[in-house]
Image 1 (cartoon, rainbow, N blue to C red):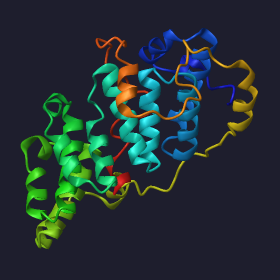
Image 2: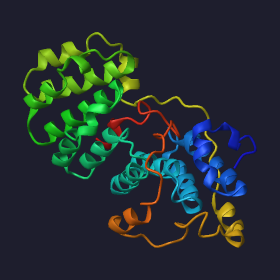
Image 3: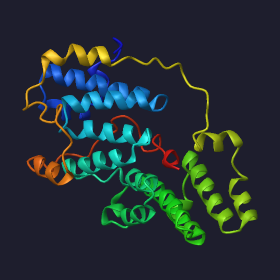
Length: 278
């Protein structure tokens, strides 16, 4: 990793979540998390590799599993993303990634499950922006099921219609798709008329100009650390075979359920858009 990637770049709350690790291990895991955030938008596969490196060292830390889940989602590994984000919910009780989980269900061809997730009581506790993102996902799920009028209705609530900025453009695009599917082409065109094309492109994730991205090979890092294995207390999940969710759930029962919700580890909800799964 480059020298300018330091543990101090992490949010204070995230650094606090890594306190259960040894100082050296926390430093290395933290730097991997910084790299996840740095690469997620421009090279999601490289971000995924850094997230996996962090999981091997700190598999029971919620922010690490969160980073792994978001990176898996961005690379189209939807089943893995669901598993990781479900684990985050068990570890800290947070449902802030419900919209991403629902979209992952769509990515797996299960729109009914996406709708079911949106109807969980926790959905009512989400912040406004995440509720809007969830509505966009549900609208897409309704389209998957051949229910265009229901897809339009989902995006007609006062909360959704009050969206501003880039989120408003994403709502307009989703409504236009639903209206078009419902045979209401004029209304679909009207939805997009107020937005400049560059804003629509950005909302759809079609921007092509990025800062230069430097990708770092993790092979040397992993080989050099084989002789310095973390103890089972610090990293009980390292190099272990995959276990069923039911067993995994038992393994984390001792985690403090009163932990604060996960902070912004690698990207805001707005930057991890639901368009990736479509």
